[in-house]
Length: 259
Image (cartoon, rainbow, N blue to C red; front, side):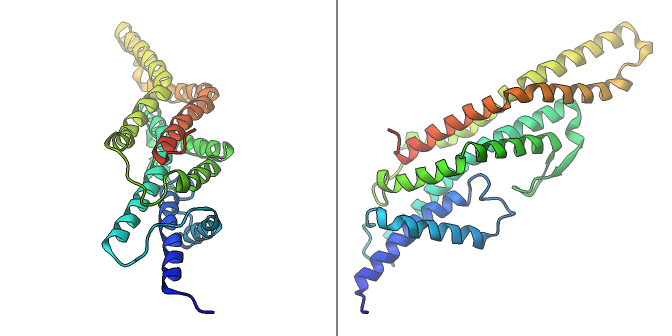
């Protein structure tokens, strides 16, 4: 069978540009971007998904693959995918940051383990929150939601149809600020509880210095911190759901798939 050069170029363009957008998202999103997943497996999954959606999306308006304009489009699609995956990662980092704050306040920050996702040492409480948030992400079908959004974006926000406005780019940067606000909200109850306990220790030490409260205060603060973490687990799902809904709304606005 003979194929025209234009047909081959069109096929490669229809494969390459959606592949870059999807691979960018998989390279930064929750779970799939973990260091425990080999890059070839991630690339194969991206390639198979791209082949599945190629028949249902419009042809990419690219006639020549070897030029500066096509290179710019490739970089744009990669940035779009990475930005969407970055937003989902920030949802997870919100709870990691909250766990680190709680660990520092309760004295549990000395217990640290290696985070398999990022490959760095984090407090055990932060890793515990990370595991819970990851499990909730899979339980809420977050991975399927993101795949549906990135596929729908190829119709709603096709390749070479424009770029993000400055306000949309600013909203991605501001998402990092919301991560700190949400983390502070999650850890506010443990912080206030430990502050009251430490204040009580200070009053007792001032009233009766011979008791030497601070010799046992560290152990009491750790035990109390564990109890407070256990009590606050009942609100963990609500916090994750609210943060995930905000992330979905931002991703939908960026990909222009909101109805």
